[in-house]
Amino acid sequence: MILETANDGFWEIDPHAVGVNVNAELCAMLHHTRTEIIGHLLYEFTDAAHQAIFKEQLAKRHHGERSQYENILLRPDGTAVHCQFNSSPLYDEAGRFTGSFAMVTDISQRKHAENTFKNREAMLRAIFESTDSGIAVIDETGRISQIKNRFHHLFLPTEDLPSRNHAATLKERLSPHLTHSAIPEEIHKPSILSSSEKSWRVTAVDNGKREGVFGR
Image (cartoon, rainbow, N blue to C red; front, side):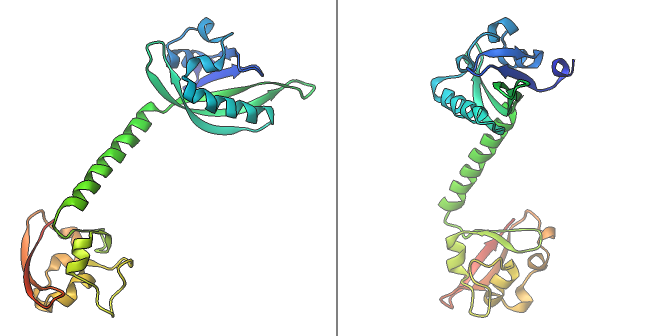
């Protein structure tokens, strides 16, 4: 009853990777009936590239190892289901290896979200690197978490300031290039920055006067 009402799939196989028992959740996950899984090799439910992962894991079960891993299962229509397996070996009363079982979780949505995030991060990184503007990303305390080379070259740290790799604050980085009276409150308290742009005259590293536009 516990297995049949579990939110995770249950899959038991014999020493040769043939299905012995499954629960309703696994059948729903794969869009297969019990008779279409029991008596069939585990390898039939994935492609050749991912069969190697199952074979490697089955070898661990033969050596008495438990493990958690990810692999792809395929539905009859070819839809890929990204799954997490928590697998353990099984033994009879004499201590002989009789197979293994796994609790199977469908993590397809999580993997899709992770891939979407990675793609978005890559796109933002490309934009970050391609623009001619000097860009510094600061956290809620005012410390610089990311910096583009253009910004670094415009506002090189002086000897008495932290090195480029140090998490200097925006105030520390800009102070040598702005008069004290010109340093706006937003640099002290970045959490109150508005989305509007602000212009201040700064002294660049070549001691020339530059006008910079700072915006959030």
